[in-house]
Length: 232
View 1: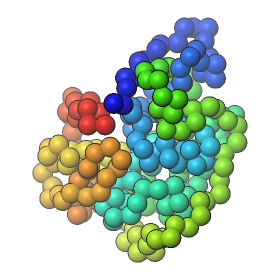
View 2: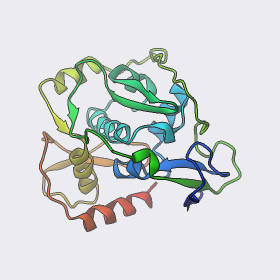
View 3: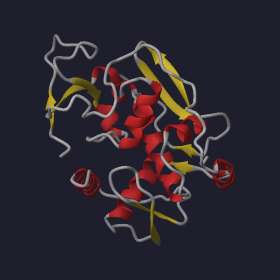
View 4: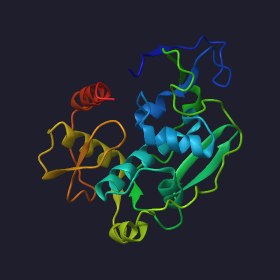
């Protein structure tokens, strides 16, 4: 059992960095892909870099989810070693960090240029369960991040082939995530095949996902996202 999650709205005099017996998250993180329970590959990455998932800037979620879709399509494991080879971590300020592409590996785009005032739109999450590690990572806030890559696995993933396949490509992160979700629920009209495991469900992805301009109603999107969590 994954346990239940309870949303707690903050009182006017409460602050994000001093939550009650719960953990702080932000509305804009939900907008960019945060869901509960948090995907296992995200908690594994946060455990490695030694920060809480709640410390990630909103666009970090969209970037990491889109990257996970592409990696899964190419049968590359979603492990911290892989993410640390392809992404970089920047400190935005006290207790806030942003994850984006490393170097010229800028094949994931489309995220908003800013989320004005996002730090003021916070809420708390309480988790039922007696296990101490039910979040699968340390939820304590830290001011510094661990940026060294893990040791190379014995069976090192072939990232050279992956980066070669990404050369010259440009993927819109929010639309890629949306299309992948529509494929899973068979709402997409594009040709699809099963691919990979994002740690909670099997997703499917189109052969040609080069910035597809999918038109989806807000009701359909929200309904699909709600259904997705029942599989987590």
